[in-house]
Structures are given as structure tokens and as C-alpha cells.
Length: 225
Ligand code: DC
Image (tube, rainbow, N blue to C red):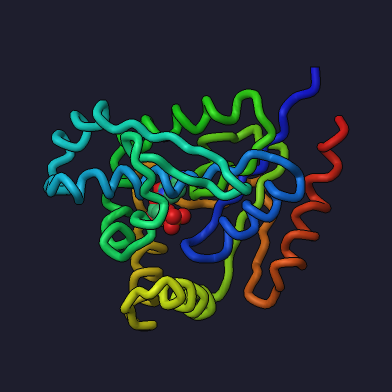
């Protein structure tokens, strides 16, 4: 039987992982899973419940009450938190500012990784995140590690949020990105790091089409095996 193909895309915040992942999924007819959306939805749950995010025991106990589901429409990843679609709300600043606290908790990560591995067992999929090539799918056929100049990343994110009508400043975004880079790379649990066999993709000066072509050229050899 043909083995399903898994493409793992890791990298820093706001460097275009999900844009590339979605484009790949569309082109190859793979499923797309945004693993960051899972950490964001869990964070939203606790913000809504006004849980003290430093009380790890409360957070761990509540994990059983959080049901996450994806439904795929047009190769976009829509996430449901206990049945409610929260895809837009999880992108807003309150969640962005708090998600790295939640994503650093070991038990939260274990619960997310278990669900992610289940999703990738039988289907061709592209999953993006921070630990996909290192922890979730260490055997993924193709691993990409994305990076870009932090200033360019902040500008891209700023434009995106502005287009959605959010009142934010470029400085605020830049600081949030720098803070998340620091937290993601220095946390104890599954810090962001490049898997030895991951291919670096620095997209500071690349168009979306160039990135897509590059990624396809790396995946193509696995498609007919
Ligand atoms: O990719 P993103 O910005 O939506 O991710 C939100 C947060 O979740 C980010 O601070 C890092 C964390 N994350 C993680 O720790 N592991 C993943 N696989 C995906 C995201």
C-alpha cells in the first residue's frame, strides 16, 4: 500500500508558513492542518474563562473540557472550539499575546501532539507549526524550516491585521514577534529548532510563487512512490 505523504513546515512566527502550507495543500490536494491554531484555540478558551494562565494545574485539569476540531473548506483550516468556529477570534491580539504561555506547558503540548499525530496517520497532509518536523512527525518525508527578516515579518503581519480592521501599531507587532521568537526558541518543552534533515527556506526576498515552486520540487519525488 502507498504510504501517505507528510510535509512538515516549521519556523518563526509570521514568516508565511500557513500561506505556503495552504498553497501546497491546494496544489497537491493534501489536507492542511494549522497546529498553531490549536494552541491559539486552547488559549482563547482560558481567556474566555478568565483562568489565571500561571495556574498550570487549573489549565491541565481543564484540558478534558476542550474539544478541538478542524473542518477543511477550500484548503483553509477552520477550527472549532467546543463546536464553535473561532478561526477569526484566535488571530486577534489578546490570543497572540498569551498563546506562548499556554504553548509552553508540557501537558498542553502532549495533548496537542497526540491529536496531530492521529490526523497524520493515514492522509496526505501539510502541517505547519514549531515542532512538526522534530516532535510530531520526525519521519515526515519533507521538512521545511522557514525564516525571514523580522522587520519584513512584522510589516507583513501589520498589513494583514490592518486589512482585518484591527487597531495595531507596527512597533507593537514587531515587539510581539520578537517576544514570541524568544519564547518559542528558549522554552523548555519542544523549543523551535530546525530538524537536522529540514530544508531551510528563507523567504525574505522570495515571492509566494517562488516559495511554492521550491517546495513542490522537494515534495514531487515522493508523490508517486
Ligand atoms: O503559528 P502561530 O503563530 O499561529 O502559533 C501560535 C503559537 O503557538 C506560537 O506562539 C507558537 C505556538 N506553537 C507551538 O508551540 N507549536 C506548534 N506546533 C505551533 C504553534
